[in-house]
Every structure is written in C-alpha cells, then in structure tokens.
Length: 405
Length: 164
Image (cartoon, rainbow over all chains, first blue to last red; front, side, top):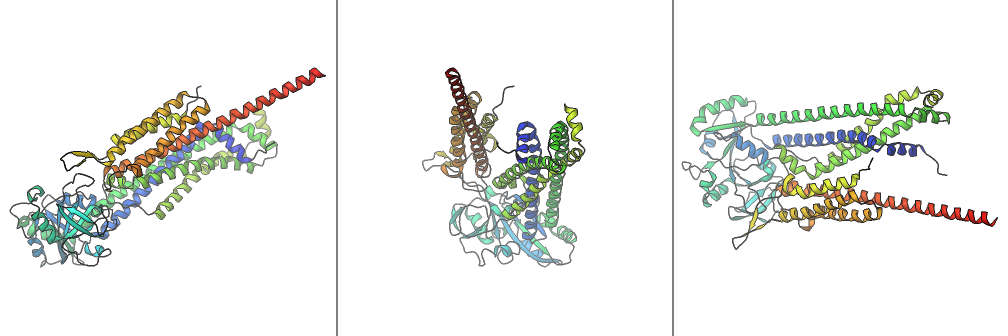
C-alpha cells in the first residue's frame, strides 16, 4: 500500500479542480508578467535617457527654422533626414559671450537600397571642433578618420574592416560604436568635409533638399553649442536667437528640455506600470483570499477528519499554505519566464515601438528583476490565504464532522 | 459534459497565428532584390513567410484532427506532426532560410522572434498532447491487464469450485 503524503493530498486537491487551479495561477501569471515587462521596459528607457544625456554633450542645437522636430527624431529614433544651415553662423557664435564651445554637423539621409538595407543617417562631424561625438567615439577609435573611412552605429550591417556602400561609393568601416539606444545606433559618421563633398559629387542635391542659395563649400545642418559654466541656458538662447534667428532663419532645441520631456514620459510610463501592477496584485490577493475561504468552508469535514486522526492545527495550516504556494509559484514562474522570453526576443521591436531612447538591460539585471518579480508572485498565494488559515484554526473537529454528516 | 481537448484548441490557435503572423501581425519586408537583367526577386524573409504559412497549415490541420480522434495511439501519432512542424517554424527564420541581416528590418525585429516563440509554443503543446496520449495508452494497458488478471482469477476460482 502506498503511503499518502501531505504533498499527495495537495496535488490531488489541485488536480481535482483544474479550472479553479488554472484561474488562480493565471491571476498570479498576469501580475508577474505585467510587473516584469513594465519594470524591464522602464529600466531600458531609464538607461536610454541617462545614456542620451551623457552622449549629448551640447546644451543647445541650432537648426534651420522648422527642423527642430526633425533633429529630435533623428537623435531619438534615427529617422534619417537632410537639412542645411549656413556654416558662417558657427563662426559668428565663437565670439559670443557665454558660449564655451561650438561645432557643426551635417545630416544627410541616404537613399533606400533595394534589399536588406534601410535609409541611414549619415552624420558629418568636424574633427577640429567636435566635442559631442569624439569624446565617446574615442573608446573605439583614437585616430583621425581616413579619406574613405567611416564609423558605424551599433545596428548598421557590416564588420570592422569591411566596406559599406554610400551614394554609390565604397567606404571602409573603421570602427563600430557601442549601443546607445538612440538614433546614433543607425547612423554612419564621417568627416564633415568628406560628407559635404560626397553629397555634392553624388548629384543628389535636389533629391536631398539642398537649397541653391547656400554656399556649396560651407553648408552644414546643425550647430551645437556648449554654454560656459554658470551661464543661464534660457538667457543665452534668447540672446542668440534675437541676434541671429532672422539672419540665418534659425530654430533651436534645448537639450535639457528634450531630456526632461523624455524623463517625464518615462515617469508617466513607470507610474502607469506600477499602478496597473498594484491593481492586478490587489485583485490577485482578493480573489485568492476569497477562493481559499470557500475552499476551507467546503473542506471542513475533510479537515475535521484529519484533526481526528491526529493532524495538528499547524499541519492543516501548512497544507493550505503549501497549496497556495504551489499555485502562486506555478503562476509566477510561468509569468516571469514568458515575460523574460518576450522581452529578450522582442527587445528591438519594443524599443522601436516606444520611439524613445532605450537600451535593453543586461542579463544580470534581467535575472535580478526576474528573481524579485518571481519572489513577489510567489508570496501572493501564501499572503492571500492567511485569513482562510485563521478560519481553519477555529474549526472544531467534532462539530465540523457532525455538520457535514 | 463533453470534455474539450485543450491541446487541440491551442494547436489550432497557434497554427493560425503562425500562418498569419508573417503577413498581418508581424509582416515581413515588402521590398525585392533587383537582378542584373532588370527583374526583381523576393528577399529571404518572403520565403520564410511562405514556409510558415505551410507549417501553420499543418499544425491547424493536426489540431482539427485531434478534436475528433479519441484513440490514444492515433492521437500520439498525430501529435508528432505539429511537434515537427513547430520545430521547423522556429528553425526556418533562424537557420533554414533566414531573414534579412539588418537589425532594424521588420522581419528581423518582428517576424523572427514571433515565429520562434509561436513555433516553440507549438512544440510544447504537441509534447503535452503526446504525453497525455501516452499516459492514456499506459492507463488503458494497465486496466486491460487488470481486467485480464481478474478474468483469469475468476475462471480459476470457478474451475476450483467445479472440481470441488
């Protein structure tokens, strides 16, 4: 004869009512899944925002009038665009009070090739004055770029040493940047003069919105300004705009404002995730508590018999708590596991769908978050069944057996 | 109440999702590769989508069969089809045909993970159906052997009684 263990009793109780077991586990699954996905996305957005504020060393970006949105889309999401500004503006700024550093960049959108490529953002940087890209590019290449060399973003196809074709010309990939979570990941960097010549030689000026009135040797796309220490950025922007906005047809983006907009979007998202998870958790606690209350009421006779044959109140409590623990562990394990798998497989898709700078957290961070969420899901069942366990303690074996008889 | 075959139901849902995902849910790239002669041929992901359509059809058909077939041995045999088809669904975008190389291409960002996940789901579901069928086969074999043993004992007792 096989001995009936406590675990056998629990297993049989759970498998006797598969629908009820499934629903209770599904609630814990939903909680774990929501919390894990939300936390990982929030972490990714937080890391992306931090990376962006570190990587954008400028305080103000000046662009042609009406292109403030375009440059933000290019920086945040890598949406390629081409726009042009007179480079003499940068020379004028160099003597201005409150301006510490000035550099210019040229943004050119490449055309879509037929297969397996997307248009990329070509960014020409001025090696003599650049203070935005060079400092972190130095980690992968510490020498000036050659005539036919480019540095590519993390998501551009091709290995270091291989060639990449831009405007029908071959370029050697000199280095590949680490992931930034920003539009820089889908950008190609080259020297400003080389980028300008490439555009002029390609005869694509009319297709890339190159205005006829611009000086063919000096046009750029944006001028980036680093303010002197202790200078009020708003006042500086006001003063510069008043002086040059009409002359050069300017618009501007204050980097701190752009980052604070992203940070507030991130806070809103995180708030929504945690409120929603909190509601699901409360729902899980209430539903499990109610169901376990009903279970205890339904099984009064069984518990009475167990008490009569010698089971202590603690053993009965252990029986109910273990049952709840098994339920919630199944839900939490499936919920965290599924969420982890989805976040891992769809990280690029989610990052693009969010349209905000985002960096996928590392494996250690994913495991740590998963562990925390699993633990919280695991505790849901035992916590929720505590009222039922208290009720169990009040059962009188003799009365319970007589009631049910 | 008639018992629903959840395994069959999930296989039909997963098979439908596999067949439709590369066209509607996570569509593959729409562009084609120009040839030297001036024509155009579809990209790799186009063929991956076609393969998924076929594999998905096999999984849906197997799921539908499982709704009607009750014999455990036959169910076990049928479950092998979605098991292999699910494995093919996951392997096709990864190794067998592949998708476009660019990390930002729609097929790599959406179709590849979706087919991997759905194919894996079909394999797990098929394994569960096969395990269920295997268990039923073992149970029926055990009960048949118990019945045979009971009949044998009953016959033995009757023979002893008659002899007495």
